Amino acid sequence: MKSYDVIEFHEPLQARERPTPVPQGSEVLLRMLAAGVCHSDLHIWDGEYDLGGGRTLKMRDRGIKPPFTMGHEIVGEVVALGPRSEGIKIGDRRLIHPWIGCGDCAVCRRGEEQLCLKPSFLGVHKPGGYADHVLVPHARYLFGYGSLTPEQAAPFACSGITAYSALNKIDGRVRASEPVVVIGAGGLGLMAVSILKAMGGHGAVVVDLDPKKREAATKAGALAAIDGGAKDAVQQIQAATKGGAAAVIDFVGAGSTARTGIDALAKGGHYVIVGLFGGEITLSTVFLPWRAISIQGSYVGSPRELGELMALATAGKVPLVPVTRSPLAEATNALERLRAGQVIGRCVLVP
Image (cartoon, rainbow, N blue to C red):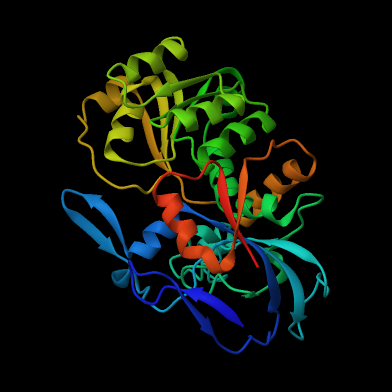
């Protein structure tokens, strides 16, 4: 099989040839049909996360060392089955849930494998979708995607499930009656605007620095699109939400966006941070109880949530985000375009 791998952090991906895996036990081997290029891939490729204050978290310190194959938004066609694989057959085309845990701990047993302390995430800890074949440990991580194309389905495995899980953390009564402020109108933010509609939400107020992305958010149905770099951005958000945001989801996760999102909250508001851009903020502990606000992190999503999301998507209830196709051999170029902010929606690699 052929893959395009991180050989050294920060360096262009390199093509590698190695034996195609033979599935054992309950494993399933799929031929890659589509692999989304995610902002998380940029952090993994760089080999570090910005913790703020001049501090970084190195991927090597997390036990993730080159060489490895990135790519966690994967659609594939089943080409081989282990002897104990059930519920799937050769030729089936499936979306892969990549956030795989150990399967045995308390977290995994309650169905939240994405929070497992011994993860086997595809594209991070195990070889991912920047390759012509992908090995999955069990068919329970495979989901149908109806009449969607592989390129349309692939982003649901990360940007889709991440947006859905973050929205799930907002009280359903708030989603139905109040605007949800979405910071960041990249692939994740646009997906959130679409999924919010499918969940019966009141609508989204989108905040982004890029006028093209704000325009894309408006086309996607946002109630308003605000320049996050404006001096009065907080006041604009408060005006658009009629007095302050009941809920903010931050898909950027920079110190500046966190400050904007928290400052824009109404009393009792809920701020959910998803993005991994990095940075830090300082908060007065007094204002937390006075304002009765809650701050919560959200990390991708569970297999159950992906199943729920795909039920919405295959029923045609989730408007699709724009998708740009790129050949797998041009994976490095796709990453660079994403870093430069040149991708509207999602870039998806194809064989």
